Image 1 (tube, rainbow, N blue to C red):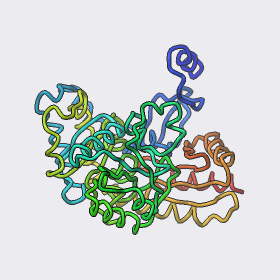
Image 2: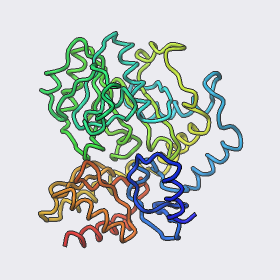
Image 3: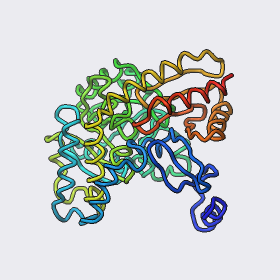
Image 4: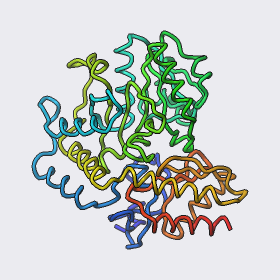
Length: 391
């Protein structure tokens, strides 16, 4: 089907809950996607920070297709070798003590699991999270998402268990945390909130505040995890060890997988029957996750992300223009805050018209979240287009 046929069929049979760009892709290779007309596009969105190894990475393809030929799904009624293997790999890259993993199907499910675990472990009923944060769209994770634009019309599903603090403000955390707070959720970088960062002192203070109150510190690494920031996990940039981490997106390299990672002690309260998932951690997605970690380790991808990302951010910060309000980020999650939403959309269109895909989030922020294998050629191509637009 061509793009018009795809649109017509979709308009007839799909829910119309997405605002889509006028394009559809047939295949990809490396950092590039190819549309139904055969045009090539440089992809700096990576499926919203999902396709860490880009498209059709030969070693990843070999691992996944081999698993498809052997076994895709059995359920968690039985032991799953591939699940155990991926959990071991996650433990090998996680902060000290975080060596137990529960597999689910998405980031939202991972955050739901983290909140259930925190409530069960502490016996408490309150959850606190940051204004402008994003933790998912299922009922509890939507409650933890401190953005009214996502909550509007779904209020009956949102529990009064949630309260919100100001991101980056430890005093704001202190003002609402108490001995009935089961968990504090925090992102190392607020991705959907506009690639907003906070100082190291904030995360260290939050760790201490949580410890003092017996509250579980839950770090949402759904977008920042798996090397995106130039460290295996975003929280590694701040020298803090949380009680739990939630993962998804890049972990599967393109297949749907989520994970909740915690300690031996905390995980013990999730006894048989207390939580579960039919598809979570099946052989296919776990093989994919293991391949992602193995390739990233072998090719030293995390260090390469730190190098190219720091230089990219430095180059963008060197541009002196009233159209740019601020450049933020770590590694390959970069936010360019423009003077207005209209300017951000115009940047996106200029790039699209020149066969480069970028994303606009939180109204006026051009977000760069490319495959982690992106190189100098791709970096320079965007920089040239962007400076051309800025004038």
